[in-house]
Length: 223
Image (tube, one colour):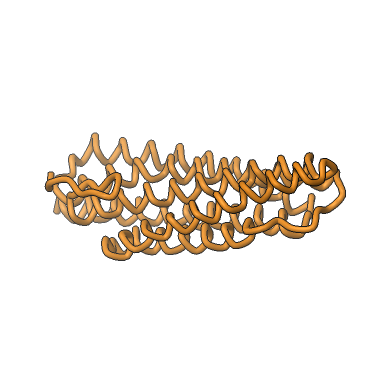
């Protein structure tokens, strides 16, 4: 009977996480779309979405505390709750970075367009794909998929470095681009950090499934 009660709570916790993850994914996509289209209305819509995500994080945090305090889950169930409790603030930080991208869009819209955003659209597409896949890996508790997603972060890091260098070069060659290029440097950094956070989510997914901590490309012993 006790296990059935815990299972019910865990199913509800999973559903809450999935709703929050889907909302973060929607926010990130909207923020990126607003940037590519230089659409202030979309950017403001994205910024408003962040409040809902903040509330979702608090709700899940309280729910995790309730499950731990009242039902004392063990083994895999305990790892599941702990992992979700750690993943939700990471999702909230991803939402914060996406919101900052939308805010940068509004600032960029006040200036003439520049010739190229370089690899920012590519980085954004990869980040969206990684986020979607990481959420799927959590729900299916697919540790191998999580490991594969972690490897993709290297591509984002390489694209970020290339974009950073080219934006600086453009600013030096044409000072009229400085205002927009500076904002794009911030955008590129936000996307690079989002990639790092998705990697953190995947590391927690591996822990959830296998009771193994992986960090800095290594693996610890089982706990």
